[in-house]
Amino acid sequence: MKRLGLAPRIPDEYDKIKIESNGKDTESTMENQKHWSILITEGEVEPWYFLDGWEKQIKEQKQFTNSKEAMAQYKALVEAHRQRFDHYQIKGSSIACFWNDGEEVYCEACDEFLQVYHGILLFYQDRLFEPSHMD
Image 1 (cartoon, helix red, strand yellow):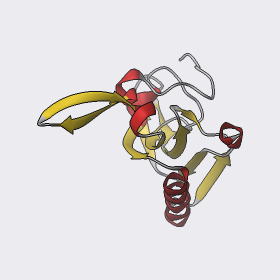
Image 2: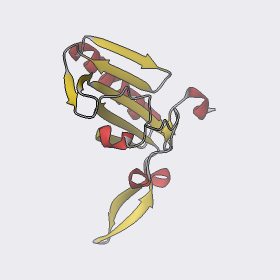
Image 3: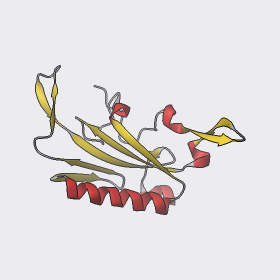
């Protein structure tokens, strides 16, 4: 698997939002409508490793128009996950990872069981959020 780095752009399919206008669908970029998003992931790789195909781990996406809403939701999700999972690790200001011992999936290619990780990622303008983005 190829590692893509820690701050990839959200793939093109997440850059567009359908909005309804006068009964017709028009497309508007995320930049113009929703600056903030939270991705909820689940997979055999910690969420900070953006390997090829990492987008397949996305289970849900929430979008927000302002930082206050997005950060409040991010913190609420992190706290709820901390209550639900035995282990967690937070990297930087925008990635949280959670797991329970014994929650595993079988990997046929590896011929072994792999740990399942649950991630919460906070994005601002289609990049992982860092406080310096607000300067």
